[in-house]
Figure (tube, rainbow, N blue to C red):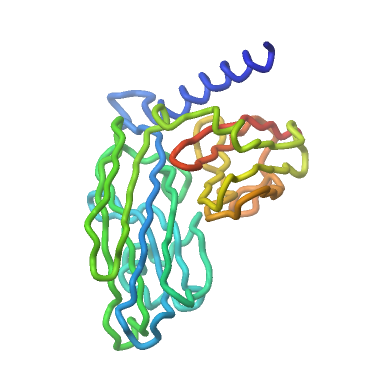
Length: 279
């Protein structure tokens, strides 16, 4: 009964914090509904110079065309050839999944927690998920690579979009789910999710079991809902998965003792777990 009561109380507190967002003073701050965006796209070669090798970027812009955050940049030292992404982001890869040039075209899945590069929840409104890839030296006389965008409205309502296939982008899917709708504590149990020891001092271990190979996102937030670091944002293998976290931000800064939250996004659902750092 004690564990159940704790879960109910924790869930209530978490839902309040993450759905309230920046709605502290309605006449001062714009409404900012917390939520999660899941985006999937399959790229298709355009037969350029180095095909099928390609570099790729997926990023977010607001309705004014202002860069918000990068979510995936696979280019290593060839980022300059992602001409549109560079012009938009200024090479900003904070909190993005990064890696080397891709050997082949593939399906890409990313998750976005509706926060900017500083970890702050963004206001409700219209946003765009952009994708660009190139198979040539696009900033050195070559043509700019293919790109596309998917626009959606972030707010209190669920959004589910399946845009038509394009020549170089297929099987596109975008889902935006407000926290109040997507929160499901039962996912915690189904995945046998554990974070231990809790409280922790120098290292937190995380383990869970996936019924099949699938995408998962795990991030850390403070008590005000600000994202501090992203631990996982990728497709993981079926079965047991384990990793450890040293209690630092994405920039390597050690977090102060206190209460934090793990936010786990899996299979269109989300749950949160309270963790405590002691020193």
